[in-house]
Image (tube, rainbow over all chains, first blue to last red):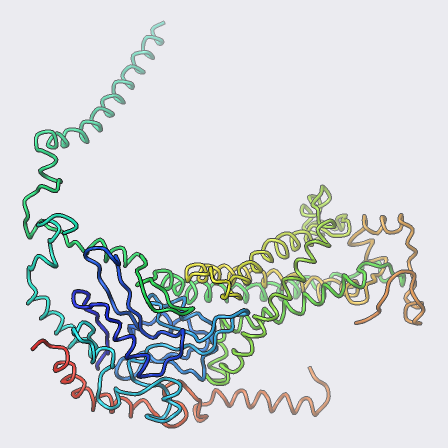
Length: 196
Length: 366
Length: 65
């Protein structure tokens, strides 16, 4: 059985934020809710690296484990989705998630948050496929159409990979082999000193 | 004389042994390091070393290690729940605690407390008023104190039920009422819990302020504990207005657990204050739930003693007056005080006739 | 225990209704399989059906030319 995964190739990501924009536009995600975000490590320093982060669709998802109403489920494709009709907006999945993927429309007094929203791997949710209910609650369903998530499909440098874990791993392994021992990636500092 | 010489000899031998052991340890550590004196340290570790693919470290390894340990980066996305952290480690730890000991040990603890109380009741039965009712009553709790008690007590019960539902509902209620049924209830339970919590906190704080003076521990309590509150030995121990057990409930339950639950609860309830990172929230949730479970277990004991366990105790909190024989038995020092202060016990019949009793206000609840 | 027969009847009905929720024949709304629009077997079949398509799409899309 397939297990859908994201993988961001940090050596290729150029921090163009197109994945973020594409996701927002495709699913009409409201202000303040970010299903995907780009994090830059060592920003502004030589050797800075950017990684695009969203829900990683964990095999043993912590969000699903702590949810008091048990609203998470894993699809046959290995995608972790949740049911907004069940969600009570307690915020626990946000505390449990290592990647900060769960988001809420509000953050107000007395713990009022609204329904949780997160990356669906462009696979919709527990509503009729391509129904307006699915579109408004979870966004478009590209996987049903045989397409992969838009963020990965439109990545200009092919840094963000999405698909069955086996295939993604295969593609990435081939890249690493081709990249080989280029000093830009491995041993650069030892060869030329720091800060070059 | 000879034995003294032997003793010095033996002690010298001991000293020599200890010193040589010491020298062996020191040399075992020092000798291998001589290599550093021979080789040029800079050649081994310095920046001038010759480049070699095998010896080189990944310049990014430090960065990725930092990311793994929760180092933050830079992100342009904004929103209340957007974090610049790539990996937060607290989540998985919190999940282990919440789905592990918090639910298993916590759940069995509450069940064990209930079972123990039932067994205690089955074996010892109700603590009766030994000399029977005298028919005369004195004031124990004033109207505002009773209001404070019942407001806090009722909100405690509602908060306990809703809180326990959120922790155990997934394992206990979903199999019974189904996912959508429980989700509807849980939504309501969460809001009731979140909105009632602050009001309950006010009640607890008032209790601490108003009743601290009656709960200052003293020598009488030691004797009270020695006799196990009357369980050990036939005679009932002396007590002032509050006995030793009530003082433990006040300082351990209301004061300590209460303040822990209130502070952690406010942190959880007001994410809009903005200082709560996921670490703080996960810690607060763990502390809040564990302290609350202990408090609920404690509360079972308090509720049992106050209602089923002791004849004549509940009416002190419902109508505010207790039987004089009950007072003499359980709080003799306090009763002497009350009489010394000049309060006149009022007969039951006068109260039931609706005549205004000597002191207090409302007659509600009985 | 309630003493009035009406109360007893209500209690019996309520506990019966609650017990019925646990029965296998009661359709429970569960995430993913609820609302009668989806079921596990069908979604598995659909996943099988599109897995080849998604695989070739990933290979076409992400490998370097």
